[in-house]
Image 1 (tube, helix red, strand yellow):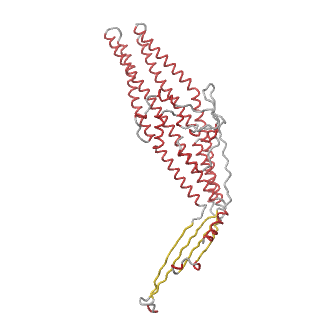
Image 2 (cartoon, rainbow, N blue to C red):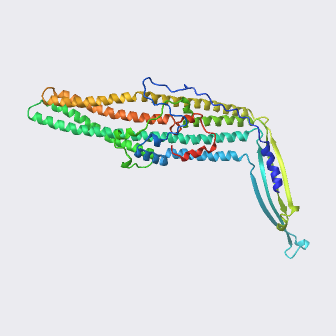
Image 3 (spheres, rainbow, N blue to C red):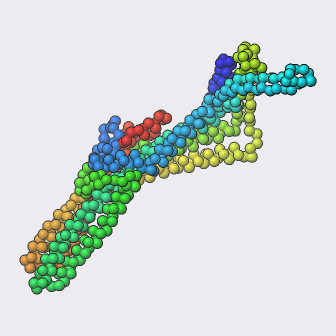
Length: 492
């Protein structure tokens, strides 16, 4: 029986050979070969070839931020949806690959019937009993993949699966960047809130002193009112920033998917921003080919290209085989004797003759989807290139901007000290001191905002360059190994 079953199943596997898929060629990226360099920009040199992937644990060196990102990766619901999509695509891949092998089923049955026949004197009960037993194993409607239709469908399912794996990497990279940005935004608003509170306390002392001088008849009432304007503005900012800090915390908790403890929150942007490592920037633009969303777009293109082969194969005949090997007997005790062996084999040929243009329309449709996937792939690369170029343009001048803001703060602080001294000596009017207070308040806020810009610029550069794929060795693009999904187990 085993020999006969082998005889039935091996020939179909040997016949499957031809494929009508178009040869896949990666579209040329419609972007320059190198990222633009801003004259005078401060950009570190290209890292040595073979450098390790740069993960978020190496870029973000704040232990509190690392703990928040880890929790976000574990709990974020959008990422859970992406992981579920991977499992679904893996299941569809197994379904597609199952068509390469025949479906073998085993069956067994028994039939017992009693026929009445008292007139023929067949016993006291006037009847007879007939029995029929059978056991068989076989395959049905197994298609020989002569023109590669099944193989093309399997290739498309594989590309879709690997695309969902890249989609998880893209979703995780976006999640890491959004979490870091929310973290630094919260840190910046906490710094601005602290500045507003300090300004309120300082303005309260100034108002109290000015009121005392007004009571003593030393100054005019206008000085008191001018001093109160600074106080009221700082109080309004404090109230607004108190709400912003809570909103920032709510946004961070939404990304994390769970409450965030006070111990995990940043104290201020001044302490959080220096804990970001630099991101290599002078890279060949081909590094974008390994960016997760670009890899996902290319696998979508590969799947569309494979479906063209399946659509072409539909124009040709299909051959299906059916085979059965088993035993049948009127007695259970003699079911598996040599004389009870039965077998049969058959083949069906199905050739399309007239489909009303459906096959041609289907081929035209899948070709159009391939063209759309090609355009989407190129557009994804162009978008990635622009994001990197924009981040580099900001990065090239961020150091100069920060130095200017730092100098402005120092000059404003010194001006306030001099103005207060001259006002106490009666040299300058109080309006000069008021202007100096406002300038210092604005300069402190601008300096905190500049720290946030510098932090978020590094986060954006890390994200736009592809996160963990930020290595020169990765420029050749997506892996061909279906086990690429194992990369999900690592946190880069």
